[in-house]
Structures are given as C-alpha cells and as structure tokens.
Image (cartoon, rainbow, N blue to C red; front, side):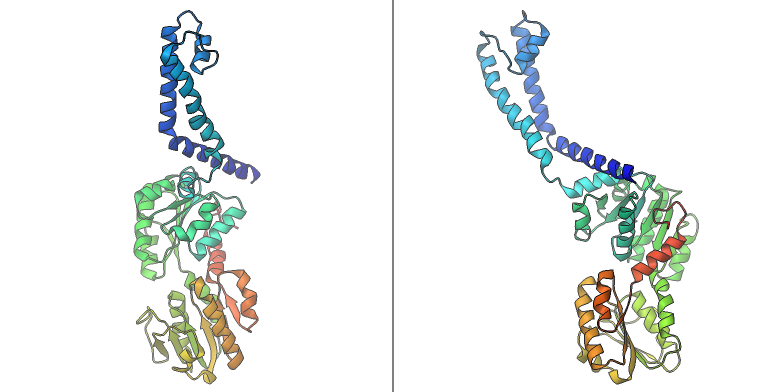
Amino acid sequence: MCALSYDMHLLNAFIAIHLKLKQYKLQFIFFFLFWFAGLLFFLITEPGYHFGRIILFSITVGLPDDVGYFGQFYAIVWPILLEVIFFGFITGELFEKYNPVITSRILATHQRNHAVIIGYHHLSERIVEFCVKNKKRFAIIEDCEELVEDLLNAGLPIVVGDATENSSLELANVKSANEVFININDVRVAIICTEKIRKINPSCQIYVRAFEDHIQEYLGESPLNAFSFSTSKWAMDDIHEWTKNRSGTVIVIGRDHLTHRIAHHISQQPDREVYLFDDVHEGIEFEVNKQLHLRKKYTRFLSDLEAYVNLKEVTQAFICWKKECEFDEAIYLTSKLNFFYPHIEVFVRIFDEELKEIVQKHNAKTFSTSKKAFKMLQKEVKPNSIIAP
C-alpha cells in the first residue's frame, strides 16, 4: 500500500511537470532556436577557439573582445531570455496550482488494471471512499464538474465528460480496466455505456445499477454479460422487517424508485392505507391499488400532510428524499412529527453517518440505501474486485 501511494505521488509530480512543459513548448522552442543561432554565429566568426569555448560563448560566458554587433546584441538578449523563460518557468510555474481537470484526466489515462466508476452519486461515493482508504486504483467518469470538484482538487483520477462518448471511455482507459461500475439514474445511458464498454473491453466485469427486471435481464445476456442490481430492492430488506405485522395509516414522502417501492409494498398489506407524497411523478411503476393514494405535493410542513390525511391515524412515516440539500426539510418535518404526533414511528433516509445522531434526537430511525447497497455489492463482486471485502 505504501508503495502504491508513493507511485501515485510520483505519477502526479510527473504529470504536473509534463503539463507545464507542454504549456511552455513554444517559449522553449524559441529559446532553443535563439541559442542555436548564437552557437552557429560563434562557430563561424570565431574559428580559432575549440568547441568547448564556443559553447561558453553561446551562453555569454567569457565573450571575445572583437565580438561584433550581433555578438553584443546576443550578449544582452540571452540573459533576459534565460531569466524570463527558463528561470521564470522553474521558480514560478512549477509551483503554481495546475489545472485540476486536465491533471486528473491525465492521471486517469495512466491507470491500469483498475476500476472505472461511471456517475458520481451516493453509491459511487462509498466506492471511492473505500478505494482511497485501501489504496486501490480507480478512475471516475462524471459529466457534472461540480459533483467532483473536491475530488479534482484532491488530485484524484477523474474524467469530466459524457460517459457515452468513446473519448471519455478512452481517457479513463476502459480498455485496461479490470471492472466497471455504472451508477447512473438514466437507463438509456447505462445501456449505451454497457454496450460500448463491452466492445472496448470484452473481459472486464461490469456492474450496472438498474431498476426494471427486463433491463436487468437484457444486461445479463450475452454478449454484455453484466451483473445488474437494484439498490431499492436491496434496501427493502429492512423495510420488510419494519412494516411486518403492523397496522395503521402510513405516510411515504419522496420521488424515486425506493419511495414508490415502499409505498406499493405496504399498500399490499391488509388493513393499511398509504399516502404517497411525490411532487414530481403523476404515477408509479407499480400497479396502484385502492389502498395507495398518490398526492403530487412537495411536503415541508405538517400542514402539507394534514390537508390530505388524519395524522392521528398514522402509525408510520417514511421520509425518503434523495437530495442532500433537502435534509433540513426532512429533519424539520421529523421534529414536528415527534413533537405533535409522538405515536408516529418515523424513518428518515440519510447518506452521511454524521447525520444519524441528529435524526435520532427526534426519536426517528435512519436508513441508508447507499450503505446497504455497498455492503450487498461487496458480496456479489469477484474476489479480485477493488471493493472485495
């Protein structure tokens, strides 16, 4: 591990120097040509001196007395170019902050026998954290620079670009990858990426997050031979335990596959009414029954709930917002439910373990789909995987 860390730092230093030399290419070419012109001038005008002395003349050390006008001009300009271009490059440019996007892209290109992670969301964060902690080789492809800004500044191997483009896959060196994790929400993009990756690398393991069963079946067939999984299905293991043999009305708040799966699962239980609050979708992927009531409403306050459901009859509430920026709304609603309706058992979806204690202060339980998915994925990967336990 120490050797790998040392190699990584050495590679970063090499890439940094390579980038600055490339940026200063024209200046150094001009600098070399000017010196070469001076060398030729002294070779022609001072034939009586040996070659070593001519070299000294070309760097303005010990010039002849009868050097001529060009020689005098050369003696004035050479030190200026030497200071501005050469020493200016060394003392200034080598120590400045390099373009992190370009540096990270080149670093990704140099990865070998590594994992390529496509899409940087909650599950990908856990994979990257594991890789960094255990000194594993990886490269990330993410089209939103803001999502990976901290990773770029940390000098990690990242390609900022569209994963469906061959150029992005080449920059991440998919051809030499041992495995690929595709963790994106767009099914179309996931399929395109899987097919392109399989053409580039016929032997690497491909793990794809996909919700629908028919998509999983398609991805698993030859020649793709990808292992597909659903994080929401894995998360339902805990949900089944929490809702088994329970009664009363249930509130489910959110807008993703897991939210809909929770609402549909509970609605199939006898004598239970489920109110699903989803401010985006007109319907859900599952068959809606008489016990499932969909409300297209963004729920921030108790009044938003009280307008549709009698909270005195509610026994459980699942707050499943996916955006981290909505955690303050989640904790506010949790606190109000605990204060005014303490009989309601509240479950809150979180992504950072640091938030767990905040939620528990309001007598609510927490669950993390990404944490659960990461543990389950570790059980499915090959023994040579970067995340193998």
